[in-house]
Length: 186
Image (cartoon, rainbow, N blue to C red; front, side, top):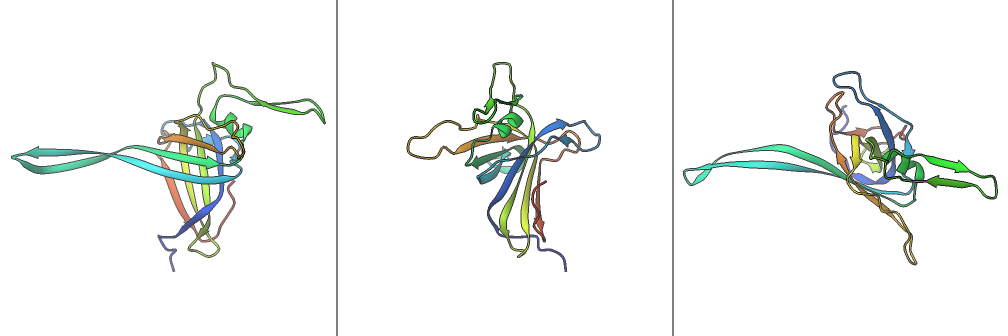
């Protein structure tokens, strides 16, 4: 019996991002760096904008056509991740010092730029009892700077909006996969 084409999507089990390393036009699929977990993942929201044009004449609607204009996403996660910041930007995390004075430093300079990355997330629960739902956005770039900082008498949560574009290698934007058996993100 074939797997159902619909499922509940309950909660976030994990979100990971990985820097896009290559994306050759019409060549084998893109390659990515090591995946980095967005620890304390709370939400992945994917939205699309449709541009609709109407043909009117003789005081009536004659036709309409629509094209996909853009896909965007929003991510929410609970823990600051310097490694995730270095995936999103052309930056690195520098480790220095020795115990008890170790430091992990992320620094952004005026010369640093936004980088393309993929983001994958999976649901904690789905209709297949032992399964999950996997969402993959293959080529993203920040559309807003991630919220980082301090928050009086509360935890600081991170939120960022993403612009999603199709890969050059295969024109793929988004994959959604209902899996009969759940598996951790690679």
